Amino acid sequence: IFNANYGLFIAAADGVTFQPNPLSHVNPDHLAYFKFVGRILGKAIADGQLLDARFTRSFYKHILGRPVTHHDMEAIDPEYYKNLVQILEFPLDVLGLDLTFSAERSEFGRLETVDLVE
Image 1 (cartoon, rainbow, N blue to C red):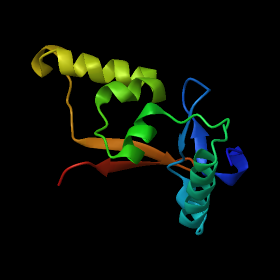
Image 2: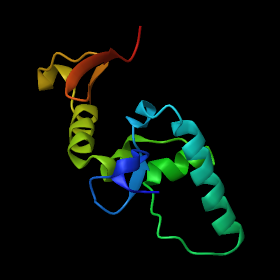
Image 3: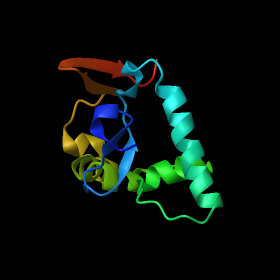
């Protein structure tokens, strides 16, 4: 299930926990595979079987319908979390940053800027 060749999950920065791979959509059947994984995990839990499956805290919170906060990002990307905390703690004019509400993502070597607000 967690084999990188399947492209469903990627390891978080801690190298121990996993989260859904944002590039899983390259497989047209990725949603069916995620549904299958969910059923396997649900069956194991119902049967009291322990699985060697450790997900990130933010993924567990998402599954449970709880809000994901910026503190949950620390396990996924410590550098991003550190920068986010720095931005939240300091007045923006002191930082001297030209901040926009956009994010850059890399898909197969191509960098794309995505606006987070319209």
